[in-house]
Length: 381
Image (cartoon, rainbow, N blue to C red):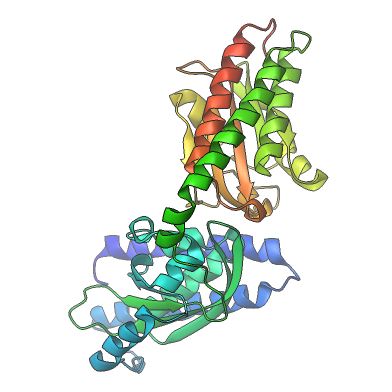
């Protein structure tokens, strides 16, 4: 690693992973995840030692030789892939330290409830829930750089519900590959039928359920919007409550107050989560709604790619981790610019990730609500 820019990038990535580990540690204090987090921290130290050793050697300084991890023979690698293709054990092949999925067997597709087209080219970390994602990323980096084999307890966000499993990561010595190849398996889980076969057989039923749900929610929202006795603030609060109840999610509304946004309604979860999301004692909790209002465009995240997207609480722990969040939709109230506010809906792991039809329904409800708010005297702020 002779390029100073490359070393700088490595340091920034390490800093980000350490921040994730620190947040996870604060969140899991005394919980069952602490052992995995501590082990991940030691893996990061191993990776730093290896990077420093390589830098010293490139600079011409002598260093103690660290024996390389035992390579996997090409013949064994081919046998592994052939064995796992039809295996009932979920298995995926990842590339690089980012862990981009390049191959998955049928059992993995069934477990995750996703198709090959969806998984291909996507980092597997986005399908690991926020509580265990930092430990997974550290283990992945250690395996990619140092070789060998690592295992940890994790929770995968599937199409139906979160799945607790033991995750095993093994680096494969793939001849001719420019980037590390990592085999990930999840033994001890019971895979569902493959996503492709399940999707084709259940699609008509899914469509009927989706259309019925849309009609029910829009009917309830229309009843609220037609209630002339509701002021703008109460109207918005009722709509947010309907969204939270419909999706089993957390929902919040932020409205324009002067030059800033102010949180005026929160629904879903217990009193602890409501207080956390309403008090705004942390940092960056209104950054995403502010961007959405400025652009007038809805942000849809079926899977969180940034744990700090909802800001952090007073202890520096990401709010998304506190809420055990897996998906979000943040939409302006109305169509076009100068919206009077923004609504954010966050799906927790217990509810499963949001579907695109649900995201579109949230956007439609927000557009209707925005038009209704403009006709109410005083506005929601």
